[in-house]
Image 1 (cartoon, rainbow, N blue to C red):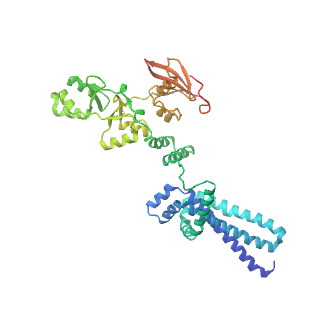
Image 2: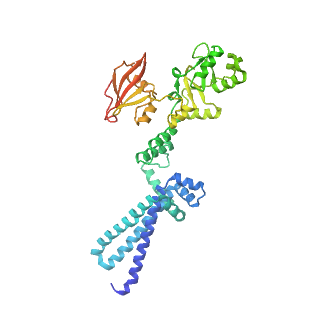
Image 3: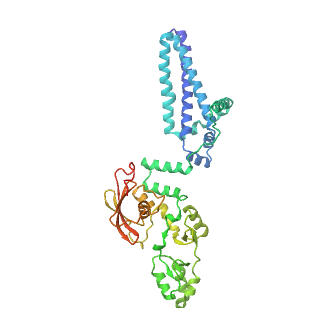
Length: 436
């Protein structure tokens, strides 16, 4: 190589370096725009960040951005390869030059314009996206006529093969995206189980009906409104609840809801002269809600009515049970016990993956507490699931293998299964039910 060729070689080298640098910028910008968190960018936009506003705008114009990046990236890569080929041919000739330039440019393009910038952009997506948003926005506007023409040509070609990209396709809902993100962070160890359960329960509020969480009427303490005032007062103040349903004639005929706080206030004002009619006068009218109401709707109804207690009825208007604001909150955050609550022994571990469970434990509670996957589509309680699958009322000692779990009836009261032994089998997710 003669000295007079040195300036020419230097010019070629600098030009190739600049083209590869521009290609690296395109690659980093493309990766960052794809990997950056939409939620984080949205928060920055709300804070008034101008660059974040550009990023948000570019993310909405995906086709234009992709077209600009691909056009610019390929143009500079091809130009750099052409210059490198010309230079190599002058230095080494056609026979050796083509092989050398192919190997050299492949390494340079792959390492310095693809892998390196994209790896950095993935690890620093927000920083890179904000840094290159302005440049990319200008290039999108400059190259818009070319990229738009290419897009129209591609659409026409696809239409010739019966593909119409203008037709909407089914996308995963926002709720499923959030749920998937929560589960992913939990599996990666970035979120504890309690947080995952809580956030997942919030997302489930619109899918769960109050029939799934209500307290059945058999477990609700009620008082006969026809009792003498003294007996009615004694029964009310001796209960562990702050609100007590009153019935007349028969237990299904609910006529009011007595708030113990209102009763104590009335007793202080009137003393021993308080009569049964006075007690009924301070009762709230019963609020009946359908059992098919979702937890989200009921939560909003509690807030709008400023009430915490409702009676659940079936499609025939029959009283099924009660639901409270605390029930819905517990569905989100888990059980809330106070100093008056008894210790909960509804789920008791007796061995490796073996538990003694009360029949009235909800399937959602046991799945959440033990991280199991018992189906809750056809039943809301453990006993209900067993009865539904067995199509009969099992006897004490009978065992059933369902959905990868072995159920054994331990205790029974009349037709009610009060305690079950449940063992999670090894291949619970891979095998069909063994049978009843």
